[in-house]
Length: 473
Image (cartoon, rainbow, N blue to C red):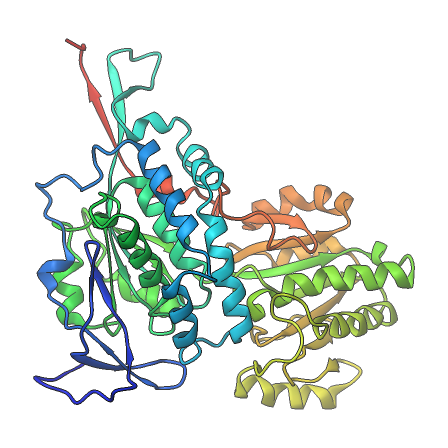
């Protein structure tokens, strides 16, 4: 962090507002650099005391009925229409300096945010996570064998270290946080300083004094700043640190974890596809299945954990090569999210390996080029690097059952074709560590709105579950 007593700020400088307990603060007092392009960006100074809520004061929304909170979030959702919301439009304009995602993908993500705030989706997230949502509003009998025992979901105090790979992370975090009735400090990522604040500024426009509005802060500091983190990452202020992000981010937080301060990690995951030999019944079927598989790859330009990176395909080399040709073609077809022309490329070190692999045919065979439209590598063993930048490794198998040994606890989503093979493999895949098993082409289907996330229900994990016993007077 580069803090100075006084800095000269260009008139056209990129400025990032902070939100402190619902209050929007504008100032250009600290200079930072964006991760993607090293663009200068300016934020207000951070007052560490303002980032915490004192333990002996109830959270602002503690006594606010959950029904009222859901009503408020639904009203916020109506204001999150991209065409009329100035903060989302400003966020898109500025995000091109920070994000690796194309502008049209970002815009479509921002257009989708309002749908996440629909009443039914929010209610489903609460009900499926908690079962009886009455535990949010008071003490509820919970054990027929202990009639004098009651339980309540106590609002938590959380720090959220957000990831910037996809604009869906901030709205999910804010909705889940609001459901808990807790207080939430959002640490903005260097590759997305604008999405979370755009939503919180909209909440402040709807009602600056609403308890939910006052329950959120969102600020940016350079990750690893010990002056800030050592002062606030303490059990006297927070119950848990919720980490989205890579291995380095997770390992960094671990050193602050101790009695009274836990970590909830949404850590890096890899998603795959399993494709049975039934896909080669005809050329038309092969083409259709390749198109479904491509949809699972190109969502958010393969930047999301749910995007497939390895395809395990059962068939002969000739059959699998036909699939690869169709997959490379399908990834380059213009669709709503991520296909078509793009400046997104695999990292430079991966491109060097691809150039070498191209000379090792027939052991490896490449389909397409790394030109932003999609590239496929066919092999008999998975490559040693993680495919990214619209790059897929298709691994040929004699028997689809052999793909189970490639599944670990780091495997998030598995798309499977056909349905009969999905049902036959689901127990083995789940036992090996898979967290989500879906029909091929549906990785972007079921998601927020009550489904588990990384094999758990986040709202349930966030809460503090407290039991009170004794005869009611």
